[in-house]
Image: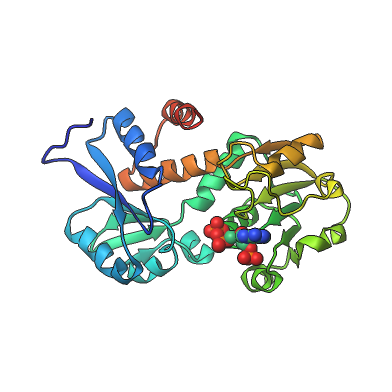
Amino acid sequence: MREIYGTTRILGLLGDPVEHTGSPAIHNFIAERMGDDIIYVPFHVKSKHLEEAVSGAYALNILGLNVTVPHKVEVMQHVTELDDAALDIGAVNTLVRVRGGFKGYNTDFSGFMRELDSVDIQVNGRDIIVLGAGGAAKAVMYALNKLGARDIYILNRNVEKAEVNFGSLKNVKVLGFSSWKEIPKGKYIGIQCTSVGLAPNEEECVISDDGFFDLIDEAVDLIYKPRETAFMKRVKGHGGRAYNGLRMLMYQAVSSYEFFTGREVPEEIVEELYRELDT
Ligand code: ATR
């Protein structure tokens, strides 16, 4: 058990629910390894109390907060400053204490970029297939465009929603899952951003046609429970490389921690954390 002192600074998570979150374990691990006098705690906050929670956190001298479902969009109304990437993505998952309030950042996209880098998937100039068009896909799409992706095919159950979210981007084509054959033959990076395949529905995958998986040579599934999803198994079964979203989860936390404290988390600590999470 960590000691708490009069000097101990507090980080936390605002969400509803928060009971199953892994963020406290990750941040407290980093704080301990960094030798920082910091603890991280979950705060179960209902939507109607979000504004009070943010201003209360400032009054309580809280150093920084993560923000999760369902508050990532709404919290943008309650920050005093907003990072450009968070504004473009339309979601904030990190609040960093500044003069007079908190500055909102998004580290989901940077966490995703750090995962791609660590598994050596190079996006620049590549064509991409994205499955899903919700909140997670927004951070992924921002990262893919920042990294220089060429054409991006977005497949979603609700095609209209995908059009609204991404249809205005000129390198993007939106399709329904059953229209995947309209994607030109070639080798694509595939990013699975739907919640389909999440435990306990481990056998599910939004597309099961074999021909589809011939299109994908490198892939990330944002799901990390189970560690190997049905989507990943199919990509591998067709000779591709596939990774789960555990590194993205870890790197979004590492990036948040770096924003909170203004210091980089050394690679040895990150790798030790990854081994810990991957057990
Ligand atoms: P997240 O923040 O995880 O992206 P979200 O914004 O609710 O959560 O998005 C969930 C994604 O999973 C969406 O692409 C959703 O498809 P719709 O936009 O059509 O709703 C997708 N999804 C969830 N359940 C699904 C299902 N049973 N079949 C197909 N897609 C599903």
